[in-house]
Image 1: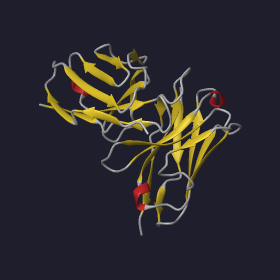
Image 2 (image 1 turned 90 degrees about the horizontal axis):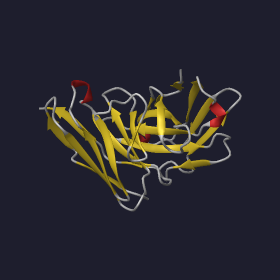
Image 3 (image 1 turned 90 degrees about the vertical axis):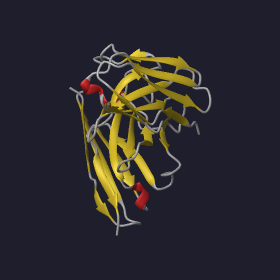
Image 4 (image 1 turned 135 degrees about the horizontal axis):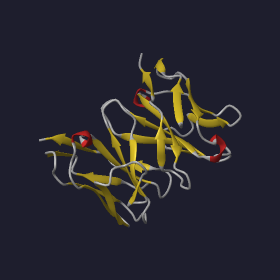
Length: 120
Length: 107
């Protein structure tokens, strides 16, 4: 059974940093691209970042480019999202999501999400 | 960036009704269109990919159509468990973008 479990969310002050993790199990982790998608309270879905199976290619939304870094450790089946220079508008539930087999950028499994709150 | 516009933003319907949601891309995306369902407090669930392919385990009352810039999600006979918010997403190119969502409410 595919499982994705995010952790690392919490309350942080504007300008601060936070590192999210996503522990994956139940599939051949290194064979799949993975992504982060966020959802601000009461709002819609917003794509944040994607990473290839090998970790050599990453893509970021303009809203987080230069502030967020997406990486993966295939030996630990874990994703990491390093978030620096956080802003109030980064407040959201952050979901990690797995690519559908044979496709890129189509998400067939999602974690339950972790809430990041940026506030003083 | 490709903008995704969904309509309507909300719809009130009764059990058994046929519901249609549309999604328009600001430029052609071939068939790289995905539909998700999201219930309150839950993660999104994949319904349809490649515009018209039904994800495994999704009931056949859900169907998708379209290509290029105009797409449709149809629920042929609305069931109580279908009351939720539906999002389209383009998977054609980065940055990936979602539509604003359509909330299907009980009439």
